[in-house]
Amino acid sequence: MDTLRVLVCDDETGMRIGVERALRHFSVRVPDVNGEVHFTVEQAESAERALELIDASPPEILLLDLKLPGMSGIDLLERIGPRHLETLVIMISAYASIDAAVRATKQGAYDFLAKPFTPTELKDTLKEAAEHLILARQAKKLALEKRRVRFEFISVVAHELKAPINAIDGYLKIMATHAAGDDPAVYARMTERCMTRIAGMRKMIEDLLDLTRIESGQKSRELVEVDVCEVARTALDTALPSAQVRGITLELHAAAPIPMTADRGELEIIFNNLISNAVKYNRDNGRVDVKVEAGAGRVRIVVKDTGIGIRQEDVAKLFNDFVRLKNEETRNVLGSGLGLSIVKKLAVMYGGEVSVTSELGAGSTFTVTLNCEAPV
Amino acid sequence: MTEHAKTILMVDDDEDFLFQQKVQLEAIGFRVVTASSKAEALRVIAGSRPDLVIVDLMMEEMDAGFTVCHTIKAKDESIPVIMCTGVVGETGLEFDAVTDEEQAWVKADVLLSKPVRFEQLKREIDRLLAS
Ligand SMILES: Nc1ncnc2c1ncn2[C@@H]1O[C@H](COP(=O)(O)OP(=O)(O)O)[C@@H](O)[C@H]1O
Image (cartoon, rainbow over all chains, first blue to last red):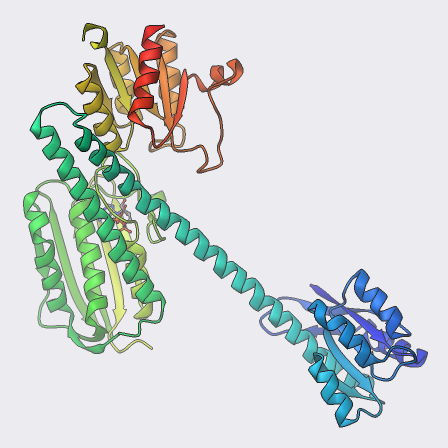
């Protein structure tokens, strides 16, 4: 529950008391925000007194009479203007001349309420002001949260890119000083490791680019009719060399062409990530079976491997950014930890989802379902 | 060379770090046995007595390094242990093998923070093996 502090500044006692009474049991329900908003009312009989109260603790809403003995309402606005308070100012005046109204607006007045007003008119005005305040607060909180997430993301990226650089740097220093003795095979191995780490870094950068493209509203999307089976075949061809090295069999199970409206590049990303994982986390001489099916306006992509499997408690984490499972089997497998989070984001864009079933030591099956018609 | 013909067990899950330190230590005459997980390290310790152990604090489990360290010291208090860690300044977890009290807890003789320079590592190894 939120409580907004209202300061009413008017030289007429009756007016101040009237406002206090009208708002005492008044509450507002703001859409999109849980709970009700209540009001507490403070009173000031002059602008000088109001200034004191504002200095002590600025209210959320200031109901300010234009014409006051001593310092006028406009003068008060001019005084508090430079302080950039979050206070919403509502001018109350019997005879707001156009000129005064313009001046007050220039000084940041939010609304006007002509005297005399009924309690209902007051409440309507305050309801509107409260909604404005609460929604502005929400927006600010959201912006802060977005910034925090962004910072966190950047610091993880920095860390992930520093690790391969440190490794490569270490190798280069040893090579430069011949600190590893005379065996050329050792140096060849070091060169190979450098290249592997550079490849890993390149993959990370490509994944980051995929991710930002997806999240930035992808200006370059091209939605056309695509044969999903054909995309699957291309992805399997891409994975073939790395599969063959380890004796892994790749097979596509799909009948006729399966058309869907999609950006081909995005479908490729889904297949490439799932198939490369199914190879990377497989055992030597294992299998990867890719199945594509259509039905009820949806396309189902199933990638099944005979690999290391995933623990049940880890399954939920997999689809978050930068999550990599650390264990003896995955230690020497390079990756960014972004692949599955990208797959999930894409699936959601196509009105679909990703799921996984897995048995430790036996294999995993990743299933992606997508809507056939164009995503919005 | 004879003074260097000692066996060092090196435990780290960073394959590249392990490889880099190993080849350099071998180049100056040490024998180096490597282990890339807590389980592997415990197996090596169970079957042999290295002259010195270098262990990474954070492996697949948060504090696997502590366990390895503890097991070595329990087996033979006189085996010097150097603990390497990327933790200080990165996760806010801070400690240093300085005071006796802290040393009793950490169990390592020296704590080095990553990235570890080889010169620095070599200096600590020489110092610990000389005493
Ligand atoms: N087919 C699979 N079998 C077993 N584990 C997998 C499989 N696919 C993904 N994983 C696990 O999920 C983690 C996250 O996958 P992903 O986001 O694609 O990142 P990475 O770049 O590490 O492969 C991997 O590090 C791996 O531990």
